[in-house]
Length: 132
Image (cartoon, rainbow, N blue to C red; front, side, top):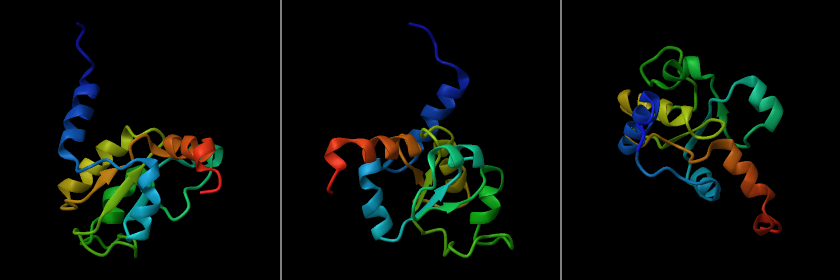
């Protein structure tokens, strides 16, 4: 058995501290109940794969400043730290670390989308999603 990398260990630890990581299939229900969906993908990935409808785009390098309710640089969509926040990246790796960082700011309901935008794209391309 070979040991994983340090970042794999950090990622595993982060995910153990997050509440349920929703799937792409759960995204419409999350949006329906008012969860704040935050897309942290860089512009090049959004250009390649498109925007995530209903998501607020916040660059990863300013995420904490834009979501901290006590920050003068916060976005208008932030209500308080009890808000349900779902962070989305490309494949669900960077978003796990970002969600943990938001938890450190007090967002106890912050988590990330399992599989990221790629899971959303796969779900929308599947035959089961047609006509739904």
